[in-house]
Structures are given as structure tokens and as C-alpha cells.
Amino acid sequence: MRLELGHIYIKDIQFAAESKIEDGILYVSEEAARAVALEDEKIKSVSFDIAKPGESVRITPVKDVIEPRVKVEGRGGIFPGVIAKVDTVGDGKTYALKGMAVVTAGKIVGFQEGIIDMTGPGADYTPFSQTLNLVMVCEPVDGIKQHDYEAAVRFAGFRVATYIGELARDLTPDETKVYETCTIKEGMEKYPDLPRVAYVQMLQSQGLLHDTYVYGVDAKKIVPTIMSPTEVMDGAIVSGNCVSACDKNPTYVHLNNPVVEDMFEQHGKTINFVAHIITNENVYLADKQRSSDWTAKLCKMLDLDGAIVSQEGFGNPDTDLIMNCKKIEAEGVKTVIITDEYAGRDGKSQSLADADPSADAVVTGGNANQVIILPKLDKVIGTLDYVTKIAGASEETLREDGSLEVELQVLTGATNETGFNKLSAR
View 1 (cartoon, rainbow, N blue to C red):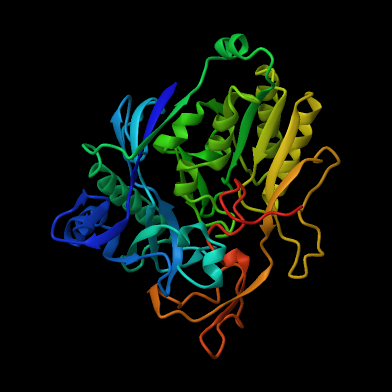
View 2: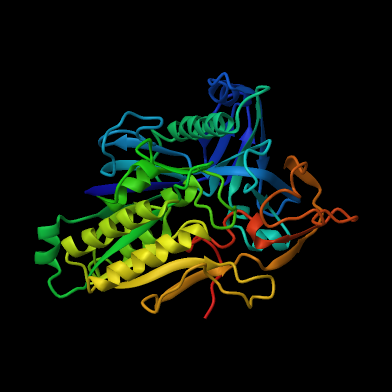
């Protein structure tokens, strides 16, 4: 597959009577965007705000972060099986609005939603302090169930992001990057001397508001399979989970997966990037065994030399991570695993819930239990009503001076396990 990804850099966001993009400025009609968001009757109201890097602004509880994109040429559309029809994507031409994001927020759904600080020490840990954020705060109708509320806000975010992305359809990108993959046979003939490497991406799929969707299908209903790495750039994988904010993969991260980006950068130079394998994270042992067996089987069938395995979440999924690692290594395929740590506030506890000698090449996204003090900021978009209930917080979180004492868990993307963050260790 060959995908041309055009970057259109957004320098500012402003509210206006008409939605458009001119000279790098995104003008948003609140009325038009609200109409798009309110297409679902489960949302009673929605308000929009803008948060810019360096402003004294805190956004919480954050549900998803989405980069607006538009499919200009090729099969299908953005977010296939969710917004667009179920066509295989990943080829043709797509435009992405860089430097900005649509952020969904509002009343808490699950206890593992996060915070984005646009300034201060918290901003150093979340990558989304560096984006211009169009924030939509959604108010659900009374009496709605948690999973219905989550789904309503999720789809509203995708609709608004698609609406914003469409504004770029007739523009000329500031920059274009080309991503091209070979067939298995072509790759072996073209790069006979390069190690054959695949990316194994574990998708959060434990249910109970811990779901990820592939072409609109709940990932816990899939068996491991192979994708072209360019499919994710068109939104083939989207977030629908409320796993801890620090290591959740918002939809923005799926669209801009740094493992995929880095492997493309090395493709044809130091490695032959063979495939993108997706697998799920399960609750029951039999399901864990099935998925890890299949993942190892696919690695063997592809005749790989190496695999990079990334996790999402912590605790129970640590078992899936180690099972994948052990079984892939047992097939003679060298692995590198990407995870984060829950090593206690002092950093001295066991980092993962499971371990094995075969997991001897590990990249960490940092210790999620590390404590940080977030100062009181001038403005809150959303609400602080639930700030003591977020994973990584406690009843003592909100201090008398308005500051917050929390673990890095509460900050969206702080210890992201694809490396879409600023922390690691050595």
C-alpha cells in the first residue's frame, strides 16, 4: 500500500461565524460544530472552548484526543466502520491537521479519565499541552448508563473531528510524507539482507469501559490479525476506553503511532518493516492463551527476525505482554517490549505484574506512580468535581491552596506505552 499523508499546520484556533481554514488559522463556528455533536439524542448539551499551549488552563476529565483528518483520494474514509463505510483504508491521499486536536471532556464516565495541563509542571508530562485544543464538554441526558454515555461522547468526538477535517479537503498541504509497504514476496526480494521485523500492537480490550475498536469492531471480539501499517493513519483503530490516563492510547496516538512512524523511518535502511500485527488484551486465561498463541503463530508464518511489542494499560495486561513475549521468542523471533511501570511512589516495587527471563529487551515509558504537585491554574475546562476519584488521585489530592497532589497516572499520555511521551529510563 502507498499512502500520501499531507500535513496542514494549524497555527491558531478561533471561533467565528463560519468554519474554515485560512492562512493556517482554523476558524470554528460553534453553532455548526454543536449541531454535529448533538446528532446523538443521548447528549443533552455541548459547549466548546479553546486551550492553547502556555495558557493557565486545566482540562478534565479528558476522555479522548483526536487529530482531524480527511481522506482526499483512495478507498474509504476516515474512521472506517465508525464514521465512514467499512472499506479497507491505508492507500491514496489523506490530509491531517497538525498542531491541533479535538479533545472530549465532561462528566466522568469511569474512574480512569485524565487531566491535560496547558502550563506548569503537568504540561511537561502530557504531549497534549503542546497542541492547540478544541475542547468539547459534553453533558449527557439524565439517567443514561455509563457505557451509553461513553459511546455517545466517543462518536460525537469523531463526528466533530471529521467535520473539522473536511475543511482541509481542498487545501494544499504544507508538507507531504509518503508511506509505502511491500508485499511479503516483494519485501524479501527487495531487502534480502535486512532483518524482517514486525510491530505487534496490543489493544486494550478488557471490557467494562476498556475497549478499542478496529474498523468499528470491538477488539475483544477479534483474533490476532495482520494490517498494513498505513491503515491506522486513516483511523482504522480508535480508542473507546477509560484505562488509566497516563498509558491510554487516545485516538490521536493511534493515528500518529510513533512505533509505526519510526519503523517506516528505518524501513529499507536497517530493517524490512514486514507487517503490523494487532492483538487484544484479555481477562480470562483461555482467551490470553489463544491470542498469544495466534500472535506467535503469525510471527512465525511471516518468517520474522524480530518484533516490537507494545502494551496498553497495566496490571492484568502485563500477563498478555509477557505471554506474547515468551511465545514469540520461543519461535526464534527476537522481541523488544514497550511498557510502563507501576513501581510504587518510591520506585522500589516490582514494575510489572508478570515477568520472564525472555523479556530481556525492554523500553519503559516511566513510572506511573511518581508523585507530582500540580499548581492551581486560572481556568478549568470541564470540572474538578471528580478530581479525587481519578486513578492516581486520592481523597487528599485537592489541597487547601487549590493545588493537586497526584501520581503521573492522572496526566493524559504521561507514560504512554507506544513512546508518545517524554519519559523513559536507562
